[in-house]
Image 1 (cartoon, rainbow, N blue to C red):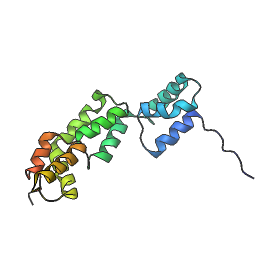
Image 2 (image 1 turned 120 degrees about the horizontal axis):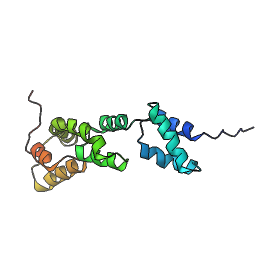
Image 3 (image 1 turned 135 degrees about the vertical axis):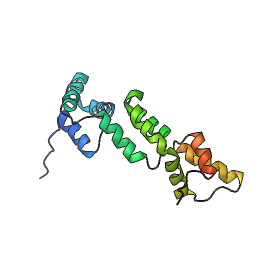
Image 4 (image 1 turned 90 degrees about the vertical axis):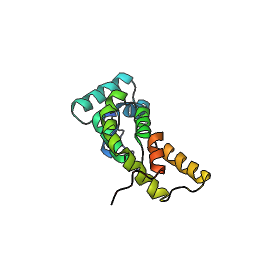
Length: 153
């Protein structure tokens, strides 16, 4: 005999999502909207979770940066955070902290994928497109493809 699963409350659903990974407020609003009768109810639940420390935009930004920084540039991370409803103000400090390591991270991504400098224009273009798609700036891409950014050891 199969038993029906009990329906989760909005708060229960939000906590379930937050238990899996950090979410931004706008992500939770989008995910909870189909289950709410009134949008004000979602805001009330999220306000409560935020006041109790279960929901934090700062923690969400740090989580995304931690997951993405090893393989992506600041532009790609900024775009992802913007799509998730994070304002430029909320991500500014965290992304500024990534800038000093941008060249080294780009070189590491390039070395894992290619390892050797391009010898013909077609391969050079391929390497440029790869690094640009990963969100690294044009200046950083040029420097990596000139051989800069490798560890001196």
